[in-house]
Length: 49
Image 1: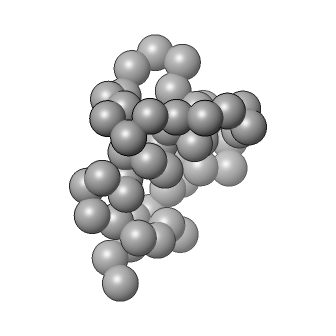
Image 2: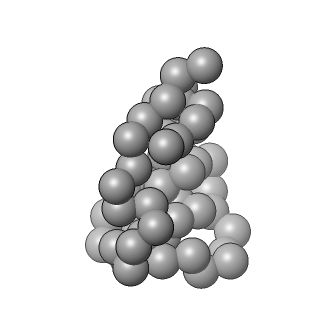
Image 3: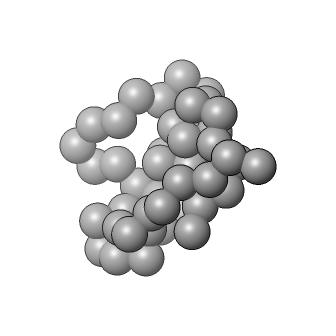
């Protein structure tokens, strides 16, 4: 298990948009919670706290 600390995960900084994201997403303006999860999965993380 490889985890990351997400202090912004439960704030307005990563809004949950209930939207699809692409497998090749790169962070940018308007990043949502789903985008951040996909990006972290691509980096090898499989949990957040």
